[in-house]
Length: 231
Image 1 (tube, one colour):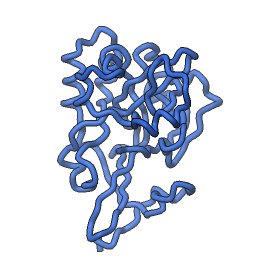
Image 2: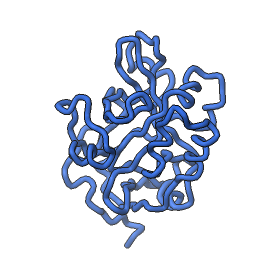
Image 3: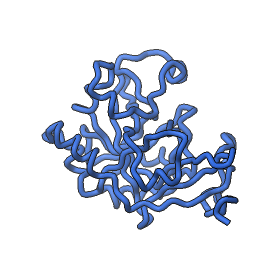
């Protein structure tokens, strides 16, 4: 399960790169580690408002859901949703057809098990810009937005940096952003975008195990940190 992402970009940087303006600019703060294990809101751009950066609760909820987010996530994890389930009759399957989104981040985290120990890595864009994670969303009866990161088979590049799971967050190429968010895009084309846009323009850096501590986040957390196997 991918439950940690990073967004250290300043608001203006996100607006400039996505060509969308924050709906609630005073509510956004850059964060080195965003953990989905507690209720948290993250920036997304939706099909409904493709020129606006909205804030969404990470962890998809049914439109008419009225209980606590925490209770729902204890029963079923919706921080990530694998694309294999989008063709099912589960409650969220129509979101892929009607409510796609991108989740702009500066990176996400991967881990590898080696010699009995787990080592973390930070995955980001080679050019230092934003990574557009593919997502789906719902709008609750009270107007709040909830979202989930779409995952699919891990690509060959990332296999060298993670072996705890065999899937990864799916990435939308920047050139495909408008088509992914368009209501006129056919589902076959949306699937093509997901399946064909897993870029190799990523870089992966080993980082310290402080990532595994749920209670801390510090400025140097993303600094490269040589793991023992790299010596």
